Amino acid sequence: MKVLVATEKPFAKAAVDGIRKIVEESGNTLALLEKYGSKEELLEAVADADALIVRSDKVTKEVVEAAKNLKIVVRAGAGFDNLDLEACTAKGVVAMNTPGQNSNAVAELALGMMVYISRNQFTAGTGAELKGKTLGIQAYGNVGRLVAKIAKGFGMNIIAFDPFLPAEKIEADDVTVAKDLDELYSKSNFVSLHIPATPQTKKSIGYDLISKMPKGGCLVNTARKEVINEEELVKVLTEREDLKYVTDIAADNQAELNEKFGKRVFATPKKMGAETAEANINAGLAAANQIVKFFTTGDKTFQLNK
Ligand code: 3PG
Image (cartoon, rainbow, N blue to C red; front, side, top):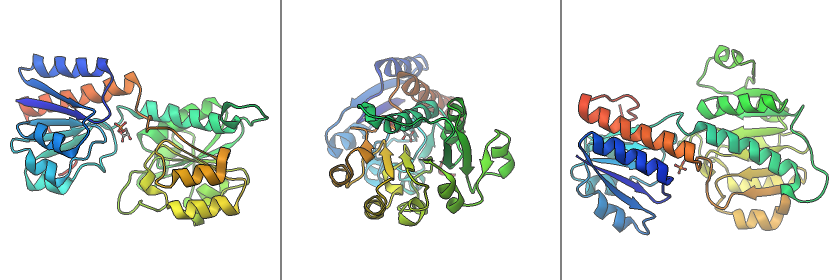
């Protein structure tokens, strides 16, 4: 079987080496398409692939249909808004992700960004400490849980909201449960987003929620830019000169945000939440192992299109 790794943003070399070892030792072959510049390159590369490993690369209906031999696609990572699951199902392709494998890297970055914005983006001037501040975690999944754990080390008070998790699961970590998003935003000095981009969450974070934040509040986005209502973000940051926004996924209107709000906003140059050697190795090797297991035993753990 031919396993194609198609990554516009490549894995660390150690991860690629590890993926190659798993694939080749199981008697399969590995093909690599990195930093490709066009959709056409991807369409050509997938033509004879039996399995596909991607990161945030868009696996559209066109890609699935061009991959005539494709049996399985694994998104090496958590968010799978880049996979057209319907197209996969229609073609009998199993789609998977590798939940939890890159969570620690994202969680560490979320806290790092909070320190960075609280210390004037590492420029001169009096900053503020995280200790004693309240951190609101929106969605208590793999990343949210780790953010809570690390933030406790900073001495932050943690509050979380997750409509898909029983309160006891959150309380078991000694984390306070917010009854709704209004409570989460109105009580939190920082709100850290860990929601996926779905039709329900897209543009769901806007004026109404952000304006509830206390004085000096900061919204931290290491999730997806699509969950933000960007026009309303401009409105609330204009009205509330005390609020801040830091993101690992530059907004479509980031240039406008930077120009209007200067040091109150910050976006990483390119999404780097999962850009650690460890996260690349964890997610990449998990993807390769899931594919080999699927081919050898038919195992479909982590299948998304059930
Ligand atoms: C994820 O959903 O796993 C993260 O956003 C990482 O995405 P990346 O593989 O594009 O860095």
